Length: 107
Picture 1 (cartoon, rainbow, N blue to C red):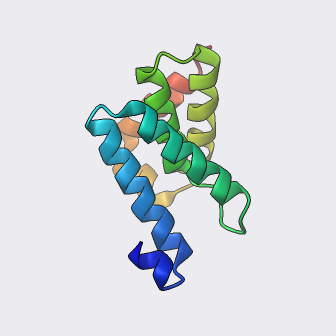
Picture 2 (cartoon, rainbow, N blue to C red):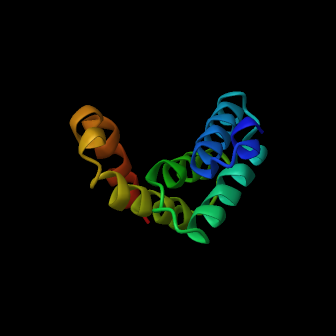
């Protein structure tokens, strides 16, 4: 990948997130979920801050893959915790944040 070749790991992670998000839109749910799960592990094992968008996508994929309510809620709880601290996100995505919170509370 272009970013990896140029030693830009953060941008490479964003690019992989975008690919996985597109896969979800195409209905390729298992691939999307696996890519997001790999990103979550990579981010958690690096010095990078956790990424609420990755957890949100894991939750969205989990819903479509009929995962347990607990697993779905856990992903959305983490997404809410992280995204609710993002000033830009809270200013522009209030409905989305409300949905994330609502799903995070259903177990």
